[in-house]
Amino acid sequence: MENKKKLVILSGAGISAESGIKTFRDTGGLWENYDIHEVATFEAWQKNPKLVLDFYNARRHQVVAAQPNQAHHSLVALEKSFDVHIVTQNIDDLHERAGSSNVLHLHGEILKSRSTSNDPITFPVDDDLYVGQMAPDGQQLRPHIVWFGEAVPAMDEAISIVSNCDILIIIGTSLNVYPAAGLAYACNEYTDKFIVDPSTVPLHEKGFIHYQGSAAKEVPTLVNYLLQNKV
Ligand code: BV8
Image (cartoon, rainbow, N blue to C red; front, top):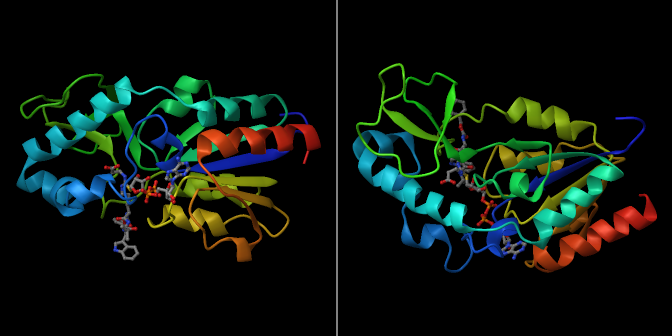
């Protein structure tokens, strides 16, 4: 990247809300109908793999039916002027389908599976996964998702991406989940920091400029500002 400023986006479920994919902790969110410990932990998988697979199969159908929204699309425009890195907590592929070329998934990808032997090789999944479906190594296939209580393999890479960026934009995350949430504090004091979220957020005292509103509305506004002002 010839002398383009490094711009990092940390996104969460809120950026996909207007694409019709439920967030986790908002009113009516996913965790209102499911207990994390029943569907999103390795223990849940050991106890009832069919329940866990049904949970992710239903979410996968939602992701396949969803379309990127104006927030995903407007981020692509930044790539002509900035060295853009997207670090997402989301397991959907809406950033990629909008055309973003540099996306790191911290918590896995719902359109991929891997062996329960923890072999890192992943396999594309665009329909249902079921009990009895085996990886080439003979072990049961599982969703390529980081469950609660599991390590986040891409965390070191994410920290090195954020630690020396010129601009950090946080979009649609409650910053509840660690270690991912720690990335909000991993940039340096010279970084220009922005956050897009309709809720009030505890980061303005950390020097973040808050674009308060929905991602589909506020991300294009912020992108225009950054492109016009060559921040
Ligand atoms: C680990 C995949 C150790 C699954 C996910 C007690 C205190 C602190 C931490 C812990 C604790 N007990 C346990 C922990 C650790 C735990 C954790 O943080 N738990 C939380 C719940 C307290 N973390 C872990 O377990 C992690 N692993 O610590 O491992 C270890 C180390 C070494 C060796 C072994 C083990 C693993 C965490 C990963 C879990 N998997 N996802 C799945 O998706 O089913 S996390 C899950 O939450 C999603 O990935 C999601 O991205 C993430 C965060 O949620 P958000 O994206 O922020 O969504 P949320 O609904 O919360 O917020 C939405 C936001 O959008 C809001 O701000 C809202 O205002 C805004 N919004 C709404 N509408 C819009 C909008 N914004 C813009 N536009 C809109 N229209």
